[in-house]
Image (cartoon, rainbow, N blue to C red; front, side, top):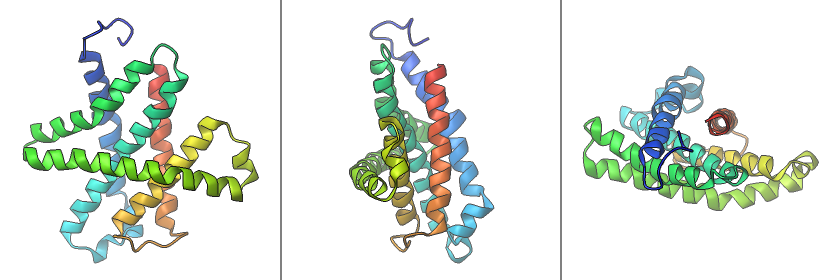
Length: 200
């Protein structure tokens, strides 16, 4: 599909972004939000419903950011397909916004969600080098990883810490099992996206 498209044909780009959103990212985000272990770690029983909604948004945004990090790194390994995945990376947040509008979400609120994705991605990206440096200082095994694995390891941990902080409104502490849970979930999600990219 992506190899046969015309130079100005955006349909394969949109179709790929939509497939990732509706078949992988959003279902996995919703499944995590409903998971009993996650809810226990996030102390749902102590939170009002309005906080549940906010946490749901953070989970979905984190799932989309995980895909964006996957695009950012793996597209460099895929000769001849770099520009295709770059365009998917660019259009994914916009397709999410469009999906929200189609579901009846107010256009202004849908735009705010798109902006939140950009903010969180920038935040986690800026934190990534610090995480990578910490892992390199603390783990000889990490030092021996390929550049690809180092990137994914640092990106996933950066997202897990940041998402945990936003879920708990900054109350999370180092070593909190919520961070471990999020790290494992995001690792699996990024692996799913990477496999999809390689097989498409």
